[in-house]
Length: 387
Image 1: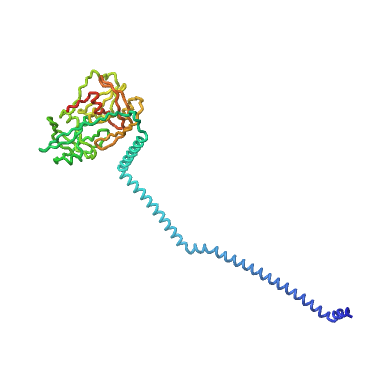
Image 2 (image 1 turned 60 degrees about the vertical axis):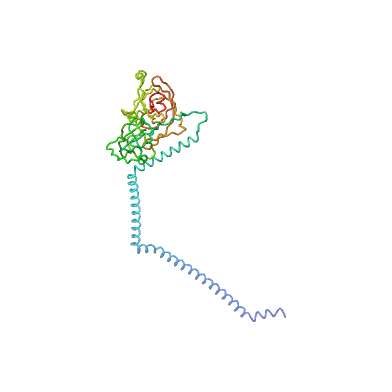
């Protein structure tokens, strides 16, 4: 009985069951349709979004062109202003270059003078370093160790009834008498200076136009019982000393030249070396000195404290002797305040008449004549001191 109940139930309710299954199928179909509809709507939305994005990008690409078209005048004006500024900068730079060139041309002499002074300072520092690094040994003799002083005398000057004693050094290498301005200003009498219409600017050691005379004055000169009158050149140099030239020295009988015996000078057998510069004056004292196979004319300079041979003349002697450094760093200071540094020192055998001896000569790069110092003039008996 229990088995028959389900069958009877199915038979009675079969129509309901069929209807229920039909409803389930319809529900599944509706779900599928809804899902496909949703998918379709999503796809359409995506496609429409892409179209919108493409349209937006196209609009953005078109914006710069529209901006350039609208603002083309402003852009041209901006470029024009930039070009104008560039041209202005270029013109300013050209003007600065032209000004610098004009400045260099106008101040060329000053620039050369500054460069010369810088080279001189550099050379002094170089020699100072060399002397410091290469000090001679105690027993090593490099240069003449004999200390030679200049001949200084107090000589009285007379002008308009007034007298004053001035310290001069005797310089047989000078043709004129010189007084620097710093000494002339301190003198008691105010002597009126006469203008130098034409004066051959001279220098003791080769630098032309180094003396700057401001005038000259004629004064009486007296030493002990001897007196004379002479012109004195007043020059602008704050570091020099007053000097008496060879003419006044002879007039006052302060120094004299020893007469030479020409029989002892074998000039015919020797080669005469011509001096490139004709500095020798009638009143200058000169003599021929034999060095090797050459006969060389020297200036007898009682105001010189060293023997000097210019480098150009020393090279023409062809002695093949190496220059030794001048460790004591001697300098030549001329009337115009010019400093000259020795290139080196050399010991040479010299001969004058019967006398032969060795002497130290300092080699300078100057355009001048060879010079014998006071000590060598006395050793060779070329100058006599009369006081």
